[in-house]
Each structure stands twice: as C-alpha cells, then as structure tokens.
Image 1 (cartoon, rainbow, N blue to C red):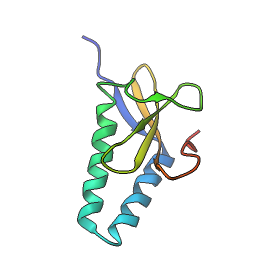
Image 2 (image 1 turned 90 degrees about the vertical axis):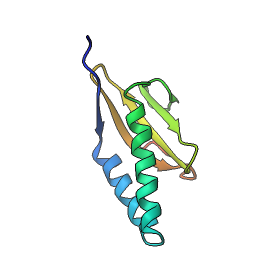
Image 3 (image 1 turned 180 degrees about the horizontal axis):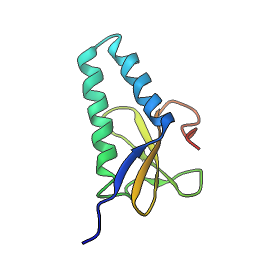
Image 4 (image 1 turned 90 degrees about the horizontal axis):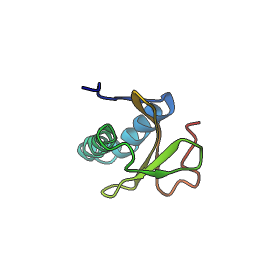
Length: 99
C-alpha cells in the first residue's frame, strides 16, 4: 500500500492565508472562518486528486480555480507531497509569486 501524500504550505501560501483571513475578518469574522475552511478543504482534496488543477506558468506547477470564493490555489505535485505555493485572489494580475 502506497503512503499517502502529505500537504505542505510554502511560507508565501501561509502568509496569503493570513492576509485573506485578516481582510475578511475586519468585516465579518464568521465569514473569514468559512472562507479559510473552504480554501484549506480544497487544498486537502488535492491529496486525493492532485491533477485537478490545470498546468500553470511555472513548469511543474498547477492552478486550481475555486468556485465558491474568488481564490485560486497555485501548487506543485511532488512524489510524496503536494506543496501549496500561493493562494491568490482571482483578480490579482499575476497569481503565481510562489516560486
């Protein structure tokens, strides 16, 4: 039985999640919790379906566009893990700084 992949967040992705939380929390703390739960659940889903996102700009990276909230997860699939590189608002011009 193959070992299950692990999910890692880059420092940039962790910072992104914190900024998203603070921004939404200023107006609606409950909504901030819901949005972060949605984003992290989508990232967790990449462990079972790592090829869900489309190939992205940087070789080896992929982009998962979320539907319920306007965010995208930029990530890289490695043999033993999925690394979330950045979480970006879809209106951000260059959502892919996690290099």
